[in-house]
Length: 70
Ligand code: SF4
Ligand code: SF4
Image 1 (tube, rainbow, N blue to C red):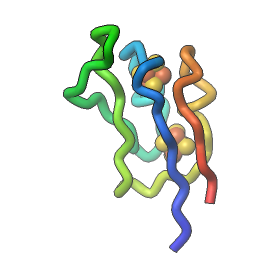
Image 2 (cartoon, rainbow, N blue to C red; image 1 turned 90 degrees about the vertical axis):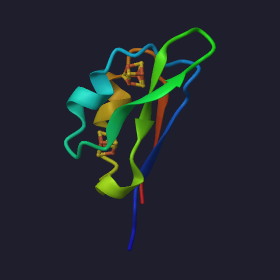
Image 3 (cartoon, helix red, strand yellow; image 1 turned 135 degrees about the vertical axis):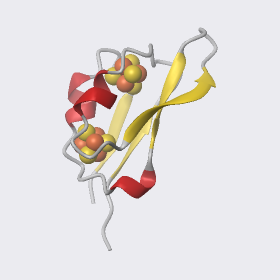
Image 4 (cartoon, helix red, strand yellow; image 1 turned 60 degrees about the vertical axis):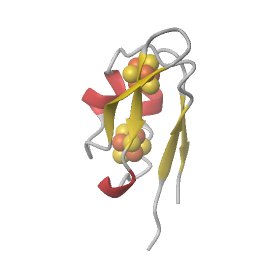
């Protein structure tokens, strides 16, 4: 089965949650990890059937998300 995915560059994440609030699949959550700047970083969930819609990448103000469409 084909599966799209995203990669979040945690060093750029500033915990704004825009990606989490806008993903239609609920495929992004806030993790329990901090980056070196002290922000709690968001995390991609591989089991939520990401469609590769790229909404998360578009709304991220830090351009921290790359989408790999399959
Ligand atoms: S590409 Fe679309 S479905 Fe996949 S994580 Fe981003 S917003 Fe969600
Ligand atoms: S939209 Fe970008 S900066 Fe905001 S929580 Fe998501 S990955 Fe982090």
